[in-house]
Image (cartoon, rainbow, N blue to C red; front, side, top):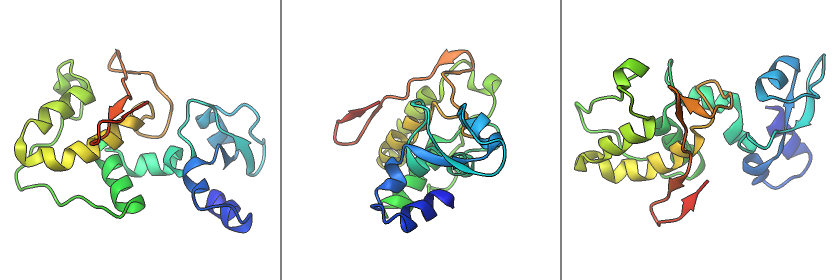
Length: 170
């Protein structure tokens, strides 16, 4: 809310919601975000560490809301961006589509990226997932509650993503 108010009251362009390199934190949120100069009391505007996504896309609130209880969800994150920011919501999934495994044991050594690739092999799923997954996988270095990470289940996270037009983003 403070980011939004800062943009509106500061007469900043709406794109600042997506590319702001500062945010408002208190001591607890500052620690979570890895901000060393967070205030000891109240909220203050602080610069974001380079490892964090800019603007609202890097906010823990958005990342928690688009995760599952035990892991991130590239699908939910990609769908949220398509629906809330681009106004291009994908259609609902076909009935009976299996969900990705929740636990490391159920994933059997496969990364989320590999599981998503296998899921897209189903032609009924591929047309929508190619858009959602490309966006959602870009957030994989941010865990389910918005903490920065480089490993998942001991495997390095690859957050490079290829958009439907062939553009590779990191």
